[in-house]
Length: 198
Image (cartoon, rainbow, N blue to C red; front, side, top):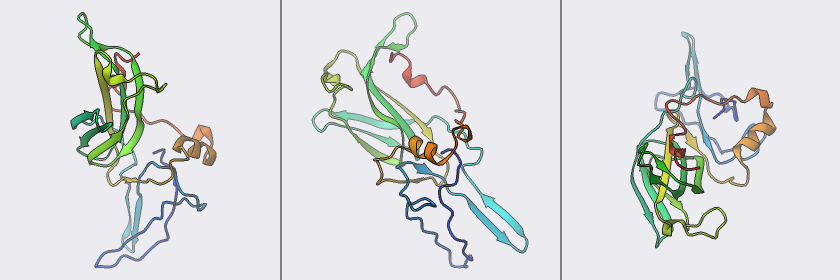
């Protein structure tokens, strides 16, 4: 997500019936990469010249709608549907509409998903309903609300799973100088989902 190369695969000659590249989820040092969304960059060369396919270059995430949002108290799961692969941020808390401004206001009590990548289609998030302390059952509180914010991922992003023990920001800082990793600009109001959750 910061546009630095994680793994370079060996070059192959393209065949008329198709060419397959396989990635084992490891970086150039042989370590399994953290769970995250990774972009692919494909460089094609021939006698006529060179072409590059790089959907991550210059990509600006855009807010995306989701549908079919359901929280089941019995199963302890929040389910929803994404129209395309996206980065997701979900918080639960209390939000009562302010009669003066019309905006919801109230405390955020639990971050369920913190800007993690999710695939397109039906998604299920496990949450037993308790706040960050594990003491308060949030769905029983007055004005229970769930705030969801999603932003698109670049075309053909690969979402890896299997290494939750290592956070991507920690991994990136170990591999790259701090000054080299720059945050991206966001399209639209990226903090709208926090409105009213103080």
